Image 1 (cartoon, each protein chain N blue to C red):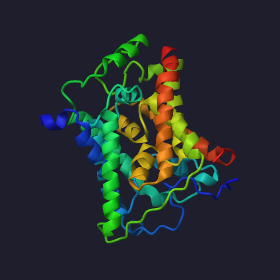
Image 2 (image 1 turned 90 degrees about the vertical axis):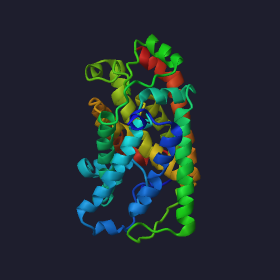
Image 3 (image 1 turned 120 degrees about the vertical axis):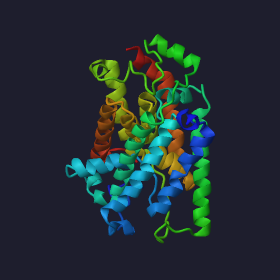
Length: 186
Length: 162
């Protein structure tokens, strides 16, 4: 069981993640892309006469099942396959986070930052609500996210997906190094 | 000027659906639930849904995420090449098709904004669902914000440069 419960190295997990691409193609000619679900949810719940959400979302319902599966898979992995000991983080990162008053508890997200009471602080609101808004807005503006562009698009050798992936990374570097420190200091 | 009819989001096919699953019973969709579970378990076990791993990636403090994404893309490229070359069909005998994506400026502007959000939340859309399943209930706020962001984009789309 130790093999299943300890975190998997990149050379095991990466190729398995890549196999999601042919799996979905073989199951029904479906193209891997998770952020499209956010558009389907809008189309299903709050279309509001916006042309962008006026389409038959039920035809895309496979993707909502896929997203529900991710949720269930996350629950299974976190309970049945949970690691016995935390895997640790880079000491430099730990020091930097300590300067913002964030400690590493071995969890997957900093619990000092992601919790319900923190929503009432400016820092928590910017991180959880502001960050989420940018993820949703940016993914749709770009026409896909890390799965749709970086994995599916690159797998199909689409150069616009390479442009998007490079911009994802550039945006991440700018935010993590230049802007996020100010937000976390709040 | 791109009109509203110009397609910029290739993840929703607005052309008539050619899939057999349209006529298939609803429980046929459960295969995608199973595929999602497989992917969700991978996200946890690879620690891709760890906020810390994302921070390490953007600070060049760990190779892990580069290894995961790089080897996933390589596996995807090889798989798609084999499917195309051998003309492999779906398990149900349907042809597998690919649509080219065309460039628009949204891939730059949207890509940068998405990158900002990715570095703040430490999660892209897949991990958001997995984090929620893993028991971080407050992530539902992030998920709803992402839905709101998607809706806002849809609303402003005609006025944004593409």
